[in-house]
Image 1 (cartoon, protein in one colour):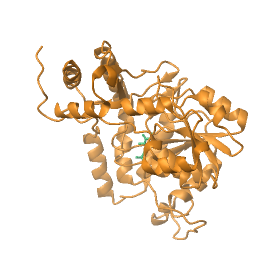
Image 2 (cartoon, protein in one colour; image 1 turned 90 degrees about the horizontal axis):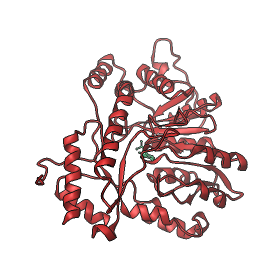
Image 3 (cartoon, rainbow, N blue to C red; image 1 turned 45 degrees about the horizontal axis):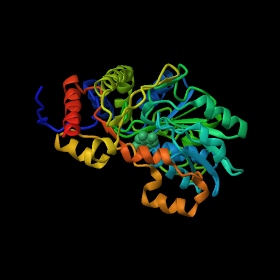
Image 4 (cartoon, rainbow, N blue to C red; image 1 turned 45 degrees about the vertical axis):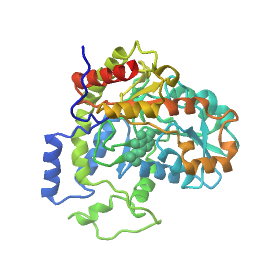
Amino acid sequence: MTYKRREAFLPFTRPMVGQEEIAEIIDSIESGWLTTGPKAAKFEEALQAYNGIPHVLAMNSATTAQEITMQCLGIQPGDEVITTALTWVSTLSTIILQGGIPVLVDIDPVTLNLDPRGLEAAITPRTKGIIPVHLTGLPCPMDEIWAIAERHGLWVVEDAAQAMGASYRGRKIGADPRSVFSVYSFHPNKNMTTGEGGAIAFHDAAHEPRIKRLRFHGIERDAWKRFAKEGSPHFDVTEPSRKANFMDIQAAMGLHQIKKLDGFNARRGVLFRRYLELLADLPEVVLPSPGDDVHAHCFHLFVLRIRPEKAGMDRDAFVARLKDENIGTGIHYRPAHVHSFYRDFYAAHPGALPKDGLPHTEWSGERLMSLPLWPGLTEDDQDQVVAAIRQILAK
Ligand SMILES: *Cc1c(COP(=O)(O)O)cnc(C)c1O
């Protein structure tokens, strides 16, 4: 077969928003409820039902959700929280914004997730908790993490931003009460979207009033109801806080996205496994783990790592060559500790890195790229991605 360059640029992802979402958004606009209202409440119920969790509260982003979890847990200056550098920077920044110190452990190079074998050495008298990140939608080995947390009296907060629809031992991510909070994201790149949006899942009802206050001006209890007929115009502000509430316009989209999520993820799984087959014979690349029955993947990202010594070019050159062939890729992620703020931060806090550094994080961080993967990607699109990769490597 002769290789032919794609005519149109293929992005690495694209949101899947259909007519149902559009009609529901129009319904919100026509109803007069644009911001937080009945649809936002219905969306939270849908998240609870889907994930099998008694409490889920939605807000404007997962980043805000992470910030609020750190506030709820009372992170104080100097407190340490153990996590991974191979994540979106908000996992770290929301610890630092409370004065805390993100202590980094290395990843498992097979899964790209935090390796629990590094945890015990990272624990100090100042350690408060652990934030595992289910990177790419592949669940972390939670039993090991929960056991270590329990032994040392630490809390666990799951960064499930990429993990809507993934399961650990047959339960949706966030459904196990051994984690105090789990955070989801509905950014357009994620497996389901509300434009922007995020949520906190939790099991202890005692957290509900504080989270509601922290997402809306320090006002407790469904403040939006004061505008409705049955509401009271009076409210009390009990602490200063941000404004991070979730709009009905966003919920309108989410109510349909969550119904479509299992179908989206099944299609992502088909494409993910097909990439594994189509790329299996290439020694120049390292392929991602598809998960297993215990760690049930939701196939958020297909992360390929390139071996520069075999490919004859590094990741950035390879990404540029793919772009020349009209194939888009993403980088998830450049490890947090190599960004300039964090380079300075860890230079000032050398104890927050392992003695041997983060060799696996750095090895993968320099070589990884995300190939196009979303439910609307066709087999033809995928064949073109694979043909372009083969063409570039053959030269
Ligand atoms: C997307 C993402 C976030 C942040 O989500 P937003 O909703 O964009 O704030 C946090 N952590 C991880 C791992 C993510 O992928």
